[in-house]
Image 1: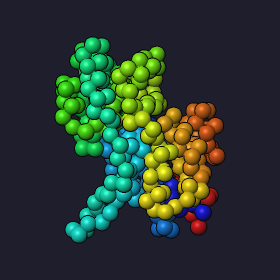
Image 2: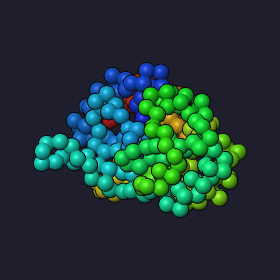
Image 3: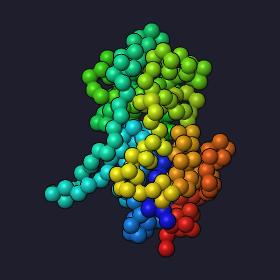
Length: 269
C-alpha cells in the first residue's frame, strides 16, 4: 500500500505550457491526503524558487534534489512552520573555487541558499539565462558580484556550462559536488552523494515507512534515481525515453493530468 508520494515540480506538477498545476491533479492530491497518504514535493529547485503551486496541499518539501528535506509542522499561532530533517550544503571550498573560475572564464552561475538566490556573471549575462527563467516562470534573481556567494551557506550551484565542460568543472572546481542536467546549457550542482533517491531515504526514515510504500513521479534526468528507487516509479508522458525506461509506469503528460490518472487508479479508494 502506498503511504507516501513524491512529486517533481517542472514537467510533472507544473506544465511548461501553462505554468499551472492541472485541476485534476490538485483534486487527486487533496483526496490522497484525506486518505492519510503523505505528499511531498521532490524538486531540483532551491527553496527560493518553490512557488505556491496554486494551493497544492503537501506535507513536506525535498528540494535541491534531496539536499534539503523539511516537513511542515503546525505552530502555536496556527500558521505552518518547518522542521528540517536533512540538510547538506555545497562545500565552502567548492564555492570559493567556482567564484575564482568565474573570474577566469566569465561563467554565469546562480548560487542558492534556503533563503535567497543570486545571479552572478562577471562578463555579462548570456541571453539564454533569461530564456531559462522565463521557461520556468521564475523571477530572475538579483544580479551581483560572485563574491556575494561567500557570505551565505550555498545549497545549490546552478552553473551555465556545457556537457563538454563537465569533467573540468567536477574534477577541478566543484570537487565535492555531483551534477544533474535536464537542459543542455546548465547543470544543477549539489553536495556529492545527494540525489532524490537519498532524499526519499531521509524522509521515510523520519516517518518509519518502508521503501515499498513509496511512489514517485518525475519527468527529468534528475528524477531517474528517484524513479528507480521508489516502490513505484512513475514517468510522465512528456518525459524522455531514458526517464521512461527507469520507471515502473508511464502515465500521460502533465498537460493530460498524468499524476491524477495514476493516483485515481492505484491510490484513491
